[in-house]
Length: 270
Image 1: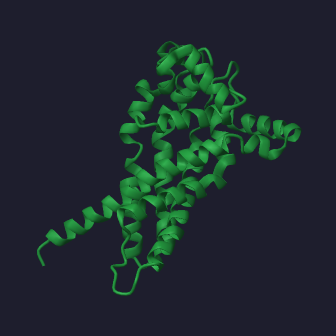
Image 2: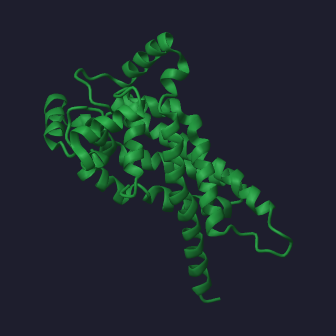
Image 3: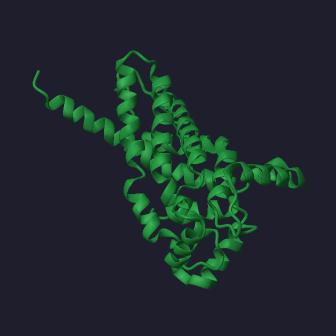
C-alpha cells in the first residue's frame, strides 16, 4: 500500500468509475490540487487500516484451506482454486467497508487527501449502512478474482516446475514464486467487468443507487459507448495493480507460508 499499491489502485478505481477520462488527467488534477498528498488520497486512515489486515485472508486462509483440501485428497490445482475463491470471499467481506470509504474520497474530485468531513457528510445523508454499500458484489468479485489469480498462478507454477532438471528439488524459488504471482494477477484481468461494477457501486454519488441500479446504468452506458469501453475501462491499471499485489501476497506470501509450515513440521517430535 505504502510502496505504490495505493496509488495504482486509486487510478484504477477512478478510471473504472468514470471520474476522469484518462490516467494522465487524474494524475495531473490530483497533483495540481494536492501535490504529493495526491498520491495518498484516501490512504489515511482508511487505506492504512485496510492495508494492515487485507492480506490475512489471502495469506493464511488460502494457505490453510488449500492444505486441508489436499490432505482430504482433493487434486492440487482444484484445491488451490477452491481455497483462492474461499479466501477471496472472506477478504471481500472484510475490506468492503474500508474500500467504500477510500472510493468515496478518490472518486470525488473536490475531496482532499483525508476528507473525513466528506465521509461524515455521506454517512449523515445515507445512514451508517452506506459504509457497506457494494458488499455483496464485492464478495462475489473477490471470490472470482482470487480463484482466477490462483488458477493463473498454478499454471505458471506448473511451467516453472516442468523446467527443473532431473534431480533438482521440485520447489519454486522465491523469484519463481514472485513471477508466478505476477502472471496470476494479470490473468485475473478477465474479472474486470465485476471490478467495474464494484467501483461504480462504491463511488461517491449525489444520488445513491442500488447495486442493481448501478448495473442497469452501466448496461445503458455500454449500449451507447460499447461493452469494452465501459466494462473494461481501467483494465491497464487493473492488470498492473493485480500483478503487483498478487506477486507480493500470493507469490512471495505463499512461499513464506510454505517455508514456515515446513519449519514447523520439521520441529515437531517424530
